[in-house]
Amino acid sequence: MTIKIGIVGAGAFGSIHLTGFSKNPSCQLVAIASRTEKHAKAASEKFQVPKVYAGNDSWKKMIDNEKLDVVSICTPNYLHAPIISKAIEKNCHILCEKPIAISREELRQIESELASKDLIFFTSFNKRYNPIFKLIKGTLDEGILGKITLVRYYFSHYGPYKSWEALSEEKWFFDSEKAGGGVLLDLGVHCIDILRYLIGEYDKVNGINFKTSCIQMEDEDNCNVLFQFKNDVPGLISVSWCNEPSETIDIFGTKGFIKVNLSGRNSPSFGPKSLKRNKLIKDLLKFKPASESAQNKLIDHFINCILTKKQESPNFSDGKKAVEFVLEAYSFKK
Ligand SMILES: NC(=O)c1ccc[n+]([C@@H]2O[C@H](COP(=O)([O-])OP(=O)(O)OC[C@H]3O[C@@H](n4cnc5c(N)ncnc54)[C@H](OP(=O)(O)O)[C@@H]3O)[C@@H](O)[C@H]2O)c1
Image (cartoon, helix red, strand yellow):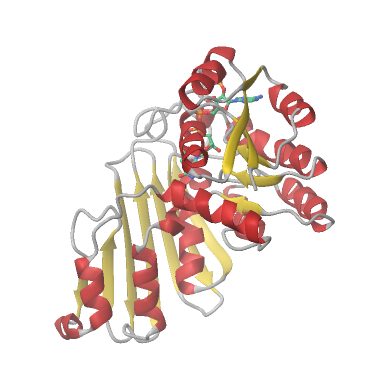
């Protein structure tokens, strides 16, 4: 079976989706829609996509005119929900970049539209495909650290247009209407998704503090969120667009702790020293970052779910929980 793919958004992440779909033998790239014709054409030439749609309404025309099995969404955040709705209307499976929506109304709308259809929906939480998280989860599930007492996730880089080359000249990441928020909506959704996978469901957000310090924008470019998991574990997510690229996770339990540098540049640290004898801790210490792109793995998983008609994670509910977490945190700004 050949799965016909239409991509919306020919920017930085559009190229990454195009790479993933072009490598999957079950996929056929059929069309690309993007705002600026020059960008859409460049992507179509690079990835040999036969049909090109350009302009603000390009995605509507592409979804109406083409017979697509999948719509893959890589646009500014404010367009995710309308494009999802259009794709659902046309019975297309959906891969949507994070955050999948920017308001609770949008989430409710998508949820009700999906309920009556048998479509596969994937939220593009590519970090889940970093095998280190499976190793960390194994350590936690085996109780090696005892009962978990505290979790911290720190994630920073220099932001869009510096740490990676977001393409659109609109500079939409710094426009509240188009982005829906700041660094917390951009990076925090990844952090809460991974922590939900490792620790369990979150219960409530306790508060945030934030600052706009390095970027000319309305929303935050530095932010800390304090929250609580349902199993009473206190959590902290700290994200920044103004600092050295760095990503670490610290997990403390009644029997020990691990601190993992997720870029794999340094070995994890842990304590007490006796944990070194544990097989799972040894595996964590030996870990080397995978060479294969996490996004390609996510796309292969998504396509496999379509072929086997099985919805797996990261699904709509995962995307929704992450956005709700950020919106709950933002409610403390008022
Ligand atoms: N999963 C991850 O780790 C990850 C990492 C980075 C980004 N993302 C997500 O990916 C999405 C895109 O980010 P990006 O970095 O790729 O941004 P980008 O480089 O600015 O790309 C956005 C693209 O959307 C196009 N676009 C804008 N309005 C449109 C419209 N009305 N119709 C069709 N296309 C339109 C833009 O066209 P023009 O170029 O003509 O303006 C641009 O090509 C965001 O939601 C972001 O959060 C995810």
